[in-house]
Length: 534
Image (cartoon, rainbow, N blue to C red; front, top):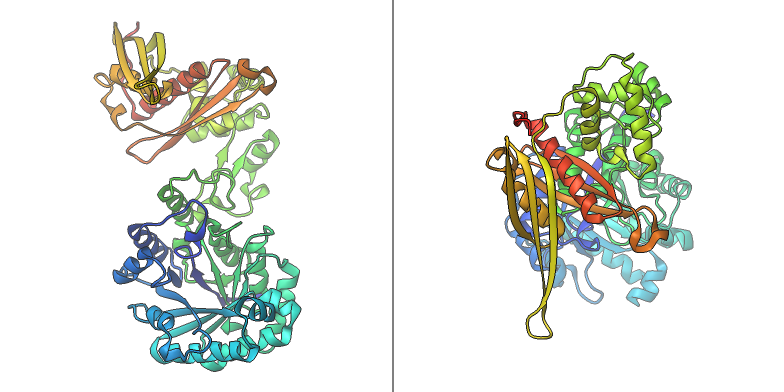
């Protein structure tokens, strides 16, 4: 296709804020803008000044950025008002942002039904608003709302809306698939037609993901000539979301040969940017997110792993480090010796390929997974299992017994409180320790009791945090007697994350086993000294 420049316009701070369950604070918006600037996007849409206190606060204290330009968002003047006398339009131009994105209808149906005005008046609203803004701002962008639906119903009017914007002085006219219902082949055909009238370097694309095609639609538009892509980090947005720039940017650069404002060094921070947003929103990152997810370069089948060791290109479309990710070799009941050897290399465990204990480990893994274990989602538990069979795992502590009591107490006949207490007895450091702790549930109480016993000997456990807890019912037909699998995700002050699991017919016992592995893995990684034999 040749080398060319595509501009990246991020709408996470506005479109992303419309995601169900997402509520950015002003500081969130500032921090996200700074991360986007470091990534190298060209434009950051900060929000709609005057629409809400959060956006107002952001525009009152805009962050200092290095490369990106902050854009304010607003709409065309109202019918019956002149542009210079429209309060809404003037409000969005009153900030320190020097770029303005103005949205207007580009569908005859929406003009007739939603606005209830004459079509000629809509064209005048677009042209007047753009011209007025262009006289005050450094750059004006026109978002043609419902363009693709409008074009399919009445192409003459949809194109007239774009012409009105360009005549008014818009630097970009952005074609919006607002309802997200257009497919890639339609996008490419329509954008190609538009580019015969308006030059491609003035055309942008803004896609919603209601058919799961927002990324494909964005790339199709670029293929047809568009040179700006609007989207959000991780595809945030109302309904099904917007085009994910986490997929768009590397696809443009690595697959289609385009230049963007993101450098190759910046591209290596892509995973970091994606994960940071999830962390800020207190969401677990999508393991299967293209390019940056934990599973994006994870290999499970033994045949695949054997090929990967010979030539990574055999089952990887790009080198994972290009986007800040890394290769992961999963271990499961589908694993072969090649999986194990590759995994051992990752964790620094040196084992001869002919060691007969490998067969014992493989058989153990397959037997455990028949019983409900899943080591491809709990690699820390796998490492403990493997080291236990093939090397020496220090005997940090041994639990001789534990007990959990849960009490529900009614204070006044109406108000109820739950109290949970855990008692653990450990053999540790040549002696016996018993501790009691309370928590807001059995797992929290057990965690507190274990740490209370172990912290005096292993102070590095102080920064251990449990960040996620998942329970899966493996045999739902057994009702309350079902086998459960618990997976716990943990982290510490170093930023490391690891997952451990436990399986049992007793959910508390499964939880304790996952907790035990989490603590042992933390001590292993910290290089804690082996406790005395008990």
